[in-house]
Length: 336
Image (cartoon, rainbow, N blue to C red):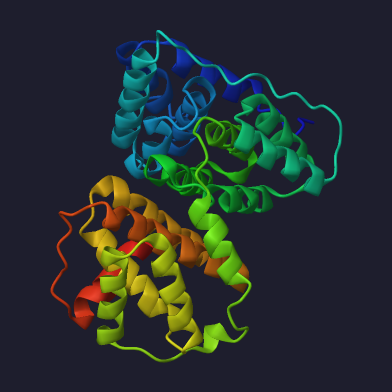
């Protein structure tokens, strides 16, 4: 029986072929030996392409983020995925990467391994983060591991929030390829978290507010479009500290948090795509959050990110306000 750290010989062979063969030769092989003979279905091949990308591209690479969006369940989209992978693989040829074989190491309590992971992220220790995730994989479910990585992703918004975007795209990728293939995706994600400097000022500020919000905030019912418009004015004119404080006061006054989300999303709607993607990723994380504290953390982080970036972006133009626009933005965020 295979351990959860191993894949079948057949899967490993397919991944190696995708890593090593040129684009055109690989597609000919897939057409001749896999499609015509019906040895592989599109999902089988997509799994191999995904694992090849995670294993041989630098953590956080564009391809890893795009695979979920490119795949449509057919071989035509598989060809697009392969082309994207090979293009980035070629671009990285002068500085290649290979995810090392899984190292089992000692068994540690999950909390101890998580502290190792957190410390590795702050000190840029990719090997330490890789080891921590591998150890946690033995004692926690992949779902729990993603939840821990989400907690770390929302703490840092350097580089246009790439960590939270990559985290949610990795989550979506695993939904398609299957949980049994989640470990290399999680290891790559943890390594990526160690590549970028940390800027957690907003998170520190928002975390303090989370613990002060009254316990029944989820029952808030007040608010209308005018309240939302006032929140947008705060987001586009104020520092993140002021925006967080005013959001806290609005929630304490009974304003429903969905109106705060509408304000944040309306700002994201007019932002550069590099800035809007993290907002939509945070919205997705909010829907995955399993408790009230985590939902508030995600909400406050979205407010802080929107305010900080709008405050620096003088080209922002406030949209015309109406309820249908706000509802449309919410629907877009659900599908993102």
